[in-house]
Amino acid sequence: MKGTLLLGLAALWSVSGCQNDSFAVVSVLMASGTLDGVAQFRVHVGNQAQTDELYYPKQPSESLHLDTSQPVTFSVEFSVSRDGEATFEVEPLDRSQTALGYGTAAVAINKGKVASVPIVVYADAVRPERGPDGGAANDAGASQLVCNPYVPAATCGAGKTCGLLCSTGQPAVGMCYVAGTGKAGDICASNNDCETGSQCFTFSAVGCSVSTCLRFCDHNDAACGEPNAFCNVPIQCGTTSPDFAACSRSCDPTGSGTTGCAPGLSCFVYAGQNTDCACAGLGDVGASCTQNSGCRTGLSCVVPTGSDTGPGACRPVCSLALLACPSGTTCHAFGGSTRSLYGYCQ
Image 1 (tube, rainbow, N blue to C red):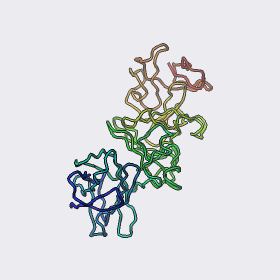
Image 2: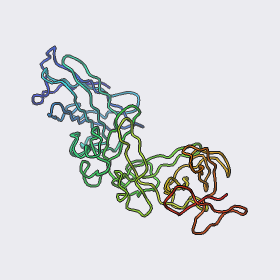
Image 3: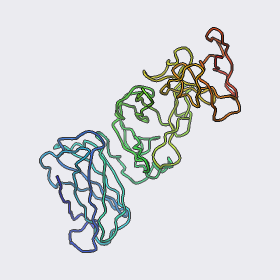
């Protein structure tokens, strides 16, 4: 279904038909799945410090359908005095004017030209209350964000959290979501399952795909709020730099190697003898490895002292306080760490 939106609102818009006017053709798709029962789109458009709120169609219509392949399109006309970057925010609404999702994009408009504006809508995402004005997002060193994952209440409001949309070759996009109750480390199916300040991320490897809530921490260990949880998990998000950061999990890498981790994940020892949960690999005792993901549950990749890249070998993890190892092996301390918690059996 296609339509045209040509509204005269303040000085930002024009319906004069001047040949020097510029147009934006907005195409709306779903990020995944389908969305039925859409009666109208609420569109927030900003340009040159001006913003306006438009509706397509002007009056709620028969239900529109959104999916991942057939876009709903409409156009916005800018007067001859308008050019430069414009922001577009789209909220699909039901007949009661309740927002069903949210999507945003920014493009450059030029006098006399037509700009294409593809917008992907995420079901249940909520528009930040302060809009895409930078604001607190700049404090996180990510000017492309419309909300700040480290302090979501600043732009998303009470009861909501800020999640990241990460696309290859594109800067990070922040989306506000109604927060859930899931704690860091809990299994999740969507961002709505996780409490404020956290997001649902997926760990994946051969034979392993597990989604859990991770807490954002802005490179500050104190933000993790748990003993032996550290702000050392990098979250790479498109072209945005520096990386975002989330908290590691405090877990027990000895014995079964699963205590403290969500079902399907294993506990490993990392640099500084910090622990974290991740997908296990297939490497058995003694198998060559370069990182923990190459070893099965209950093992960690032990790289020789003085080597940054290995190769290492998968070894059982032992507690230096207990020195418990399989018969015929002894517990050796990891080299190069100021903490003395864990070692490896050989």
